[in-house]
Structures are given as structure tokens and as C-alpha cells.
Amino acid sequence: MNWQQWLAQAVFRLRVSHSPSAKRDAEILLAQVTGVTRTHLLAFGETSLTTAQHTTLEALLVRREQGEPIAYLIGEREFWSLPLRVSSDTLIPRPETECLVQCALNLLSPDRAEVLDLGTGSGAIALALASERPAWRITGIDRLHGAVELARDNAVRLGLKNVQFHEDNWFKSLQAKRYNLIVSNPPYIEVEDPHLMQGDVRFEPRSALVSMQNGLQDLAAICRGAEAHLESGGWLILEHGWRQGAAVRGLLASAGFDRIVTLRDYGNNERVSQGRVHQRKRNRRY
Image 1 (cartoon, rainbow, N blue to C red):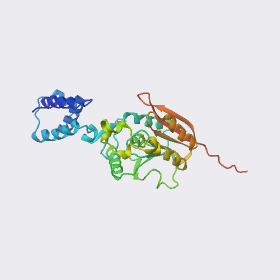
Image 2: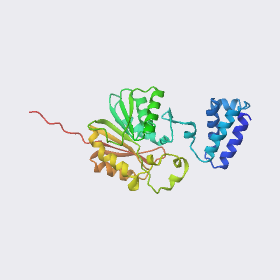
Image 3: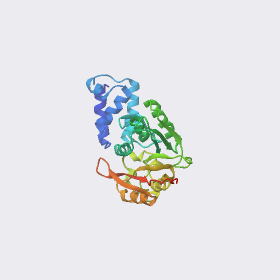
């Protein structure tokens, strides 16, 4: 079987299994296994598959027919133009999270800053910021050992030296350390949300998706704990569900933040909320 023939039967099977992007999925899988670009595949479609390639492709195609995300099948997802390794220990980075990255870049100057990424997963947010701001020192933490190891590997592969990753559960081990900026894309989906049984999220780690108290438990914990770890005038930026903007603004206000605002994602949904710690007054000397 040649590349063109395999693509034709793979696209047919994926359409039967209701894949929303059958042609693209088939091309990505074939490019992954053959080690060539998608453009090369189309230009040299008469190239024959080896027996080993065909066996590997069949196993991947079956998994995709069952709905497993392409990112997990090939072990990679692009975020902020960075090729990031992903695994079942981490969420798959999504375009709307890039809105959080842009918010962070807009808030602080390119000069030196200390930044904390809570629940870093694959390191997507931390690595995007590190790539854009070489003078910033960025720390990403996650409670899952597998996620931390993956984020560290991504940093090494990308050659980013101004970022580090540690195991921790929110602020538990940070002690008195303070930052100019804290960012987080925490779990915020309600336990009974029907979307948990649809699409890619069926395969993603539930602990990184679901939060109690109508999806607000982790967002509330971060709002309560952030002030003790922010410098005077420091910022907290949170990604949240598209219907949680008002609730998160309330959490930020209750925790003593000011200059609170919610920004919209590419689909015009409320997605990212930010607030600033009140400027602390210094004691005057007479």
C-alpha cells in the first residue's frame, strides 16, 4: 500500500467514526510515522509503506477512531509556536490559553521579573513566557511528577534556561517567596458538566479539569493564597470557564485585589481574569 492509498482509506474510516478533522488527522499520523512533512506526503503519494510503518499506522488509526486526541497519539502539540511534548499526565494546550500568555506579556515590562505558573502541566504557559521574556525568571509547579518531568524535558528541548519546574500543590511549599506575577490555568469544570464525556477531554486527566463547588474551588483557593506570594503591586491572572467571569471577579475582589478586569478569548467568550495586589505603603522615616 502506498501513502496515497493509505490516506484514502484512513480518511474514510475516520469520517465513519465521526472525526471532525478526518483528512488532517490522517495526514498528521502518516507524517509522524514516515518522518516527512505533510507537503511531502502529498507530493510523493506513490511511495510505498513498509510493513512496520503499516502496522504502526493501523494501531494509531484504531486509537484515533476511538476518539483519542491526535496530540496524545503523536506526543506533541504546538502552543505559542512552540512544539511541546504532551502526555496523558497533562492537558492538551489550547489556543484560548494563549490569551492568558498575551495578558501576562502586556502587564509587565520586558525587564527582570519573577513569575509563578501554578499547575503548569506540560509547561505551556511558563515556556511561552520564557521564550518571549529572556530577562524574566519563571517557575512552574505541578503536583504530578509526570507533568513536572515532561515540562522540564520541554524546557531542555527548547533551550530555555530562564524557567524551572518543581513538584508542589499550589502554594504549599513556597514559604515566603514572592513574585511579580502569578498565572494559572487551574481545573474549573463542574463535576457534572456533560462536556466531560465528549471530545478530547474524555482522555485528559480528570484532576486537571474538574473542580468542586461549581468548578470554582481551585480558583477560590488560588485567589485566597496568592496575595501572600505577590510583591506589592503584583498581578494574578487566571484562566476560567466562559460563564465564570463574574464569579472569578468576585473571588478576586473578596481576596483584596483591585484593577480587576476580565478579557475575552478568540471566540469572544470571557476567559481570563486578572487583578492586582494593592500597593503596600512603606513606613515613612522622620
